[in-house]
Image (cartoon, rainbow, N blue to C red; front, side):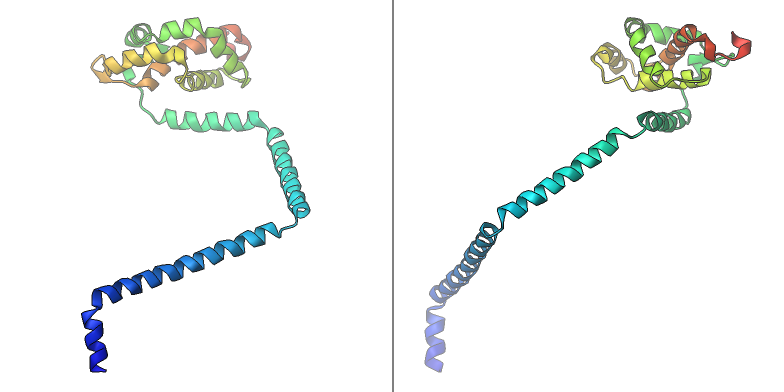
Length: 210
C-alpha cells in the first residue's frame, strides 16, 4: 500500500491531468447522447399533428387580432388623455406665461415665448393638422378642447417640424429668469390652438362666451 501511495505522489501531475481528461470526456459523452436522444424525439414527431397545432395557434391569433380591432379605441384614447391631463395639471407651468382671465390667455411673457421659441411657426404651418387631431376626439366642451390642445401638441414633439423648437430650447433652458422645458412651450401653444379650434367650432362654447 505504501508503494502505491509513493507511486501516486511521484506521478501526481500526470495522474491529475488524466483525471481531468476523464471527467471532461464523461460529460462530453453525456451531452452527445443527450443531443442524439433529442434529435430522434423531434424526428419522430408526427408532422400532421404539428401542422394541426400550428393551424390552431394561427386561428387563436387571428381571433385575438379581431378582438383588438373591435376595441373601442376612442374610449381608450380619451382615457389616456384624461390620465395625461391629470399628470400635466399637477405640473406647475411658469406662472408668468398665462393670465388667469376667463378663459386663460397668454401673458406678455407667454406670447414672447410663443414667438421666440419657434412654436408659433410650427402651429401656423400645421394648424389644420392639429385641429383635425382634436376633432378626432370630438370634444363636447371648450374645456375638453383646451385639454386636447395641449395633448395633441405635446404628443407631436417627436415630429420633424419640432426640431427647430427643440434646438432653440437646447440653447435656451431658461426664459424670463425661469427654467423652462418643452411642456412650457407646448402649453403656450395650446392656448393659441384652443382659440383656433373654438373659432372653428363655436358650438361647444359656453353660452356666455358665444
